[in-house]
Image (tube, rainbow over all chains, first blue to last red; front, side, top):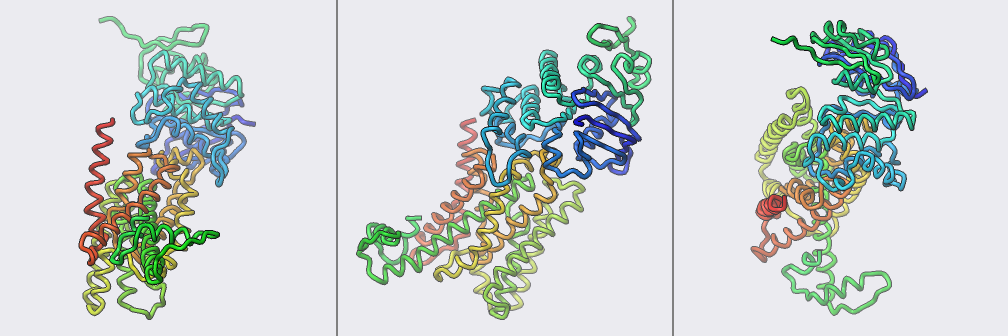
Length: 258
Length: 320
């Protein structure tokens, strides 16, 4: 019910087709990783799932059609973590995270204990206690990414759309943030769709992996099936070796000695 | 507010004014010792003027904060967006036409002019700029304001018998003709303030940009339209009775932001309070500097506002 189904989805942006006839599905509680070179259409696909870009074809996200569902209802079910968040001046970490509660608040009422609780939990989960009163404009890239993720968690969605969630993080924080999302997915049956750059991490964390190339889904299966050295060479134009490991395939750049 | 009640050409004692105010409270009866004319000066001249000052200052500040939030542009204020010049044109036409369009002609035409002004700025900015980029909106506002000011000058020169009334209006002033002005703008000001305050959270979300605001459940285009309409209603109503009082809409919200943070939940009420207080105080200065003659309040807001702004800016720099 809270999974995602897309059949024959085509997305246009500024007159150009950026995703062509894509059909993808992930069940509730699954993690779909979207991988592919820059400009392959990963971000556009996430925006369409969040109802922020019009799309042709059939889309169902958490049981809702993003094209016609009311904004607030959609926002309670689907949260998007943008790749480049906009930072308002003079706003503190706590204030920014609390904005995640916006779709849950009744128009004439303020925040309830439930709302404050959700904000506190999100701050704790992302180890942001102590940073609450800092201005978001003063944070490092890594801290900021955790703050935005905390806002998305405070939204308490059923479907989590992540656009490059760990691009600004060091290796340790990449792993801990992805582990945290994975915990949520398992504990609360959250469905995750994440555009990811690092093929190895994508393979280790996803239950399903879709490879996009120039707006077309060229492969969609478990990571072991999708990630082959030959396919990565074709799509990325990269020379790699794919090592089979217990936690999932490991993609290693390859260079012949000169 | 009290200072505003105490300063004026007629001598009223602090003691007397306080007691007279207390006397007005339900259930309290004290003899203030004020004579009947003094009582009349307090309630029919000074009190309405102070109340008007609070309304005008609070509304200009609230509208300024709203425009800045909606357009995500710290420079946005009623002046830069063509609202004031549009309202100015409308009010001038109404003054020139005299009583033939009814007692509420000035507020109505000022409002219509303000709406046309902001629509022109917005339309021009978005058609030229592709996206509604900050710089383009501001430039469009400057162009629209210049055009409307020119039209206004034209109308004003054409019918030069009402020149004095128009000039007095343009320089900005808080009138002293009893409660009429207060009553005339009160409904518009209240509607505008209620709509904006109910949407304070929406303003916080719009600050995140359209994509993030939409992903958090806001329809950015609709929210923007509603907030701009509300802010324009308030500004136009206020401008129609007080004339062009500059600097308040941009200085006060900035000061509030620097002192209390940018979250609109606190920013909007704080801006209103500071704006009301600021305008009453500048009005006191305007009455006092050349007493018994009065300085146009628009002159005082600019002279007081600019250094105040620099002071707040410096204070923030030294703290950071």
